[in-house]
Amino acid sequence: MPKKVLIVGGVAGGASCAARLRRLDEFAEIIMFEKGEYISFANCGLPYHIGGVIEDRGQLLLQTPESFYNRFRVDVRTRNEVLSIDRDHKQVLVKNHKTQTTYKEGYDVLVLATGSVPVRPSVPGIDNPKVMTLWSIPDMDRIIEALEKDGARSAVVVGGGFIGLELAENLKLRGISVTLVEAADQVMPPLDFDMAQSVHKHLIDNGIALILKDGLKAFSPLDKGIRVTLNSGKNVDAYMAILCIGIRPNTALAKDCGLEISERGGIVTDDTLQTSDENIYAVGDIVETVHYVNKEKKLIIP
Image 1 (cartoon, rainbow, N blue to C red):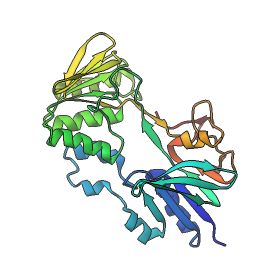
Image 2 (tube, rainbow, N blue to C red):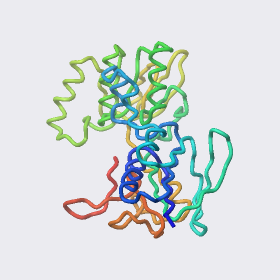
Image 3 (tube, one colour):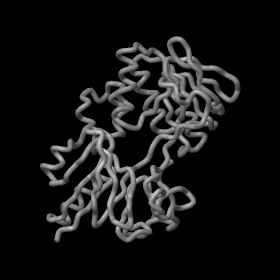
């Protein structure tokens, strides 16, 4: 009988796995669960749609459930969230958020591709709706709504890595007053300190207020915005604050079902990406990978 493969997660790792599996096995039954509404989207392009560099929102959507099925014959179930894994009976419990019902689905092989989630530090005021992140299509839509419907004219971007700089640049392209806050003494940690000075100058020359060596302490509400309080005691007021301070592997399902997790927080896998359960594999941000040069295992996400 054809194997039944369930894939949990439908963005980069999950969609790539499903497509490759279909090329290798034309008979397998493949079901891909995605708790969100979108699959296989270009998350690297999110800041550039905010800034208008990528004008067409549709260009971010590489596949839809319908197009993915037509091309790869994969049963794609969006807004279906896998709640738990029963390893003994080889089945998962799924919640259909469209119908608000739950059901069980059995498997021969299970692939975890649950990706990562933005880091949200435990500071006062973190749950304020004007404290946002940028990691998904809905995140992007909320920021654009704040700009277009609410008339936001100022923003604090917390974090000076790749996403933080791209977002600051694109908000500035929209005429927004931007303050960029970084706890370290430079932006872009992969750069040497001397090279980062050129980036600092470019940011300042383009009208971005740059605050270095000052970390986040708290958020507090204002009548039409939010106050960002830093460790130094400095306050920065803006309409919204957007956190770009890194991501962490989303390994809750793996932990809950007892798969082996490394000290760094990634799922332990072998060279074939098989986990400590012979019927479960894992791909993407949630796994440790072997460094090509020194052969050490490490997480590849910040």
